[in-house]
Image 1 (cartoon, rainbow, N blue to C red):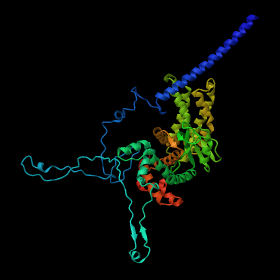
Image 2: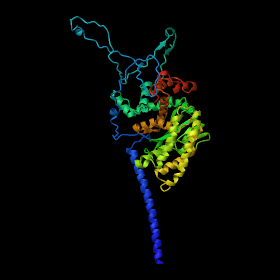
Image 3: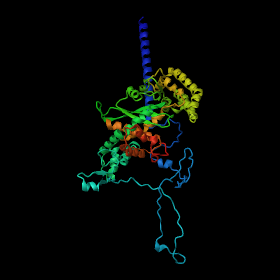
Image 4: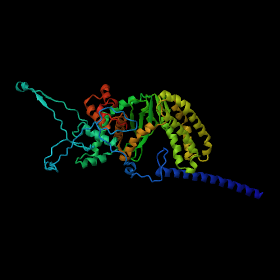
Length: 525
């Protein structure tokens, strides 16, 4: 009897030890997986595309050596006198629109002697040796606005009061500033919001050119033009965006140092909304908000009826009736692709992440084939080719859950659960041919802000963050409509102070697609 009690106690202890070992093994596997993924994220290749690299170490410092091609001929400055059809993916060196300066190299008079007979030489022709492309760095000059004053000679001689008439001058872009010009403010805004050059670096560059222009002054100017001239354009663009059939949305973090009720270390958010591939006049809008609450998307999209592309964030799932949320297959694919990077090569081909990735790649491969089709044709093709792949993928994901129950916190478990949790949103892409398989449009559009944030790091005040959201919106919308951001901003700053910007009809002339020809660019950036 005593032996039986001992055996039962031993069996119970063995069972507990086995369970503990299982838990520890799962924990070790989870930590090992996390360590591999973090190592890959820190030191590995970031791209999700499949590239075959050689054994040479990649480095950021050998771009000139890697990109150089001695066999490539030098570009020639040709004058193009006819409209040449551009080949897809090919850029021509067309400098026909640039002014030409001729630099004549003359033979000194004392050398105009014939070496054979000693007679004098005369000019019999001129040859163009080469044509160089010359750059003139930024130049600064002071422009004085002078007005004329007129009076009446007759009244001067006969009347008690002499009337005076002054000529009208353009209104200043910043009221009360005698320094800010439309071109200067447009230059500062373009440097920061297009080229990601922080104001403190611009301040240093101005000092190197003997100009004492502080970052505080520049910040004040940007906030002023944002509130007075760009915000009305922003609001008009917002009205048009909400009338779209498709909108893409995303959000990213931003730090604001001086914000009421929040510590400087806390995070705020920049939200982004943009038109889809069906829009003839693309619009990209940012909105600064102090938090990531789901009411933010709901408030911005009030009045919108259509499809909303987004990632898996729940704020985009609890929206008013009339809005259909469409999931992002790129996010699904990314989770399997990231996990696959941490798996040894000999195990990759037969692994569960590789199987999930193969389904996603099959969908994207079909999308490439559908790229040139009309929306109606794409809708029909997706029903034939994409829908069966999606159905098979979700069946596979459900059958794979048994493999992840032992470690539900693993990256594989999260990837599979994410796909299943987003199923109804991911399948919505089949509802309309103008929808995209991913939310990459929004991610591409929010990237300029993320790049800028790496340079200027934070906003000092809420006003500055709001101004940044408005100016980024105008700049990115201009780029998407093939405009030169600097020229477009200067056009707004020259025009808006001299019109009634509250008049809807007059405001239309400031919209990107109504900008003058000098604002237009051939480059879609």
